[in-house]
Length: 328
Image (cartoon, rainbow, N blue to C red):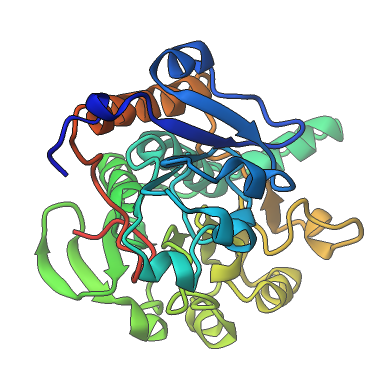
């Protein structure tokens, strides 16, 4: 892609949003650069004909698959999220349509959230809060964080930011990913995630931040959970489907493990699910990366990509559609 696209006129952008979803904060600037067709999942097929670009602002939508027949001019899809598992389907994978995501936007915020979960667990902050609310003054001892062992499953940008932050407070951190190695600049050692159960025996904090793909779905199953030592702590900020949620719930109910879960298999968590009330479970509503101003950052990122596109360039980095994430 080297031609200056201004010569062909203004690009047409289909903006996929949903009721109740705040629109991009720089919508006026977007309209100054492109012809914008706002749509929802129900009207996406009407908005796609002639549109070169699709901005997926409704990040949990899988509507493109059913509207794919109408994408007669589509050349680029940008998803305003780190994960693209809801978007991908065979037709898109097999096409030459460029896919980009919000790479980099959530790295630092999610790493901070993971650190907060680790500190809350080791310093027993949830227990302290409960005792306060109950009017009980009960002295206890907490665990020293420095020297504890953490395994971060997922070696992309979010996993790397998490590893750096955990190491900064003294944890012994390793990673687990698709390719094992001993000389990684952020993790030191990266273990083979396909053999996850073999690496869990000495882990105090297990952080799940891998992208959701066919290879990672259910990767933390009953066998892997059983391999964790008593008292281990699971943090899932990736996707709910990375974990066998029923098996994890059973471990939490037994009191053997504890968990902070920012992502669940079904969101919102259904009424009556035992995770609501288990003492060892701490559930948050998929908010680990959503710091004040995050929508503004996402909107600005897309505008920067759009400027590159209009100048004849190709926004980077591209998602490897066969793998389901940005590789490298």
